[in-house]
Length: 285
Ligand code: AMP
Ligand code: FE
Ligand code: FE
Ligand code: ZN
Image 1 (spheres, rainbow, N blue to C red):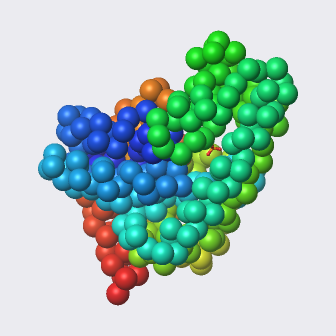
Image 2: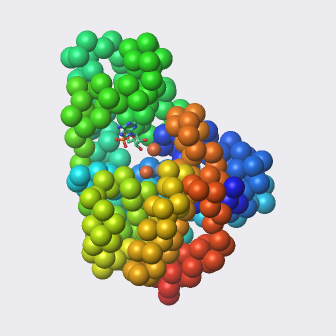
């Protein structure tokens, strides 16, 4: 187990533990340094930081931005930015507005497909944070419409399925840019989910994003086998990107990864944190 984990979610996005309970779990498992990286929001950072500090853990402000990308999914992680930064908050508002416009339309499509569901139920399932597709999945499971969250995505929620609604997403370059302007370092999350044809294609993409200010690559992730991590590490070295890592823990919402699980038994070295901090300082300087 790694005592450093730079990727996890709370109820402020699609995790199942509150920021406080998440930090308590991390401390109980023996973690020393953690970053909370909720999707498209910084709303959990204050609470998590306060609890982490009380528990004697080092806390790094983080975020994970969903960006516009084909063929797969591009999530951009940010670290050590100023959570109060005006530009960052303005951009997050745009992103959150797109989500609020999309969600009721998913309800309309589900109802058109014969599912009896109210948006209120989904809001309740979200636990007070922002509402995403995993919360729709949770309600569909609870109602017995489908047997599992996977089935909910397959039948209704994934791209091309019956209740899928496209939502506006920021470009990767813009996400990298506003994280950098807020004094942070951006890292491309779980690069396998980009669904590119191979490592050369990944490297080409990262080379372009580096020009936009990219500073890191998530080399270690609970879903990465050692061969993947090895290939990604080589790319990070060649492009001078910090090799970040995390479990992507979501609690019960996604059962596979425990906090501190970075894939292939990897333990993140503290030099990664130091390097992220150094590059973030460089930005502010
Ligand atoms: P949203 O940001 O509301 O569009 O929801 C995105 C989240 O839904 C991702 O972070 C994943 O946790 C989950 N998700 C997306 N696609 C799938 C899929 N095909 N199967 C299961 N979960 C998915
Ligand atoms: Fe998620
Ligand atoms: Fe992600
Ligand atoms: Zn994540």
